Amino acid sequence: MQLSLFASTILYTAATAWPHYSEPRDHEYQVPKGDDRRSPCPGLNVMANHGFLPRSGKEITLEHIRYATGAAFNFAPGVFDSAVADVLGNGISTTNTPNSTFNLDDLVSPKAHGIVEVDGSLSRSDLALGDNLHYNQEIWDAVAENLGLNRICKGDKIVTVETAAKAHAARQVVAKAANKDFDASQLQSTVTLGTTALYLLTLWDGARNGAPKTWVKTFFEHERIPYKEGFQKPAKAKTAEDLGNMFQAVSAVKA
Image 1 (spheres, rainbow, N blue to C red):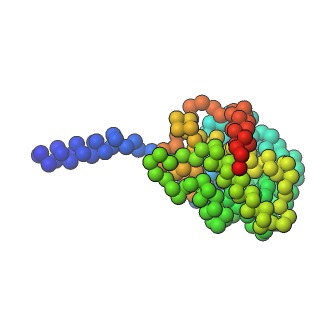
Image 2: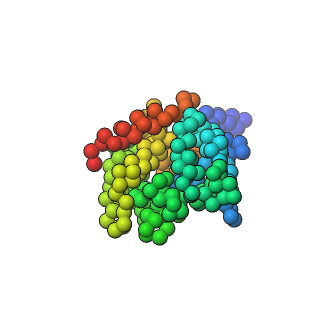
Image 3: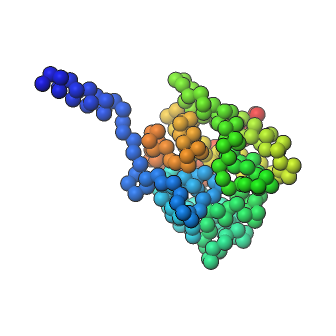
């Protein structure tokens, strides 16, 4: 009896001391199957892998993007409308309704390059080097090292704005050296810096003033929302102004 009571006490204590994090019902993580399409953008892939976007990755609409970004990460409606308009308005889509839908892998098209897909990705190679669609382990390993994702310890569990900005800058230097056709335009610079601001805002933990390293690692390496690592959708909606402020913060860091 005493042993049973002791065991029950231990189990109860363990259950209450460490909260149980789980994936939302109907939005469990699934790897792509068969003819499912994915993009060069980890964020879009993450939402498709959890079923916030169609898991097929096909026939994506503006309303799909609005719903997914809101339901998964609490972005306010309209934050990504201009990005979707860029896709639908530049002949990038290969669907039967190209003015209103696109497939995720349409974003690797040369037509998308310099508009919504640019050189210097944190996890993909450049278009001119052959494969700008699939996750590139070598590229990401270097970025992860600069982000300190392999050094997670007490007092060093957060990716700060400064760390993220410097990792982005280091990646651009390497990408330019590897690609003689690297696009060094102002638009290129703005979009790549914007992707760093975007992942920081998406995974931002205001209580810790940064993006937890385990969340960033999971997001990029597994293209999974880090629910099991403690991520919860924030109560306050993220706005275009919030994204702009994060962009300015990243831009202000001296490499």
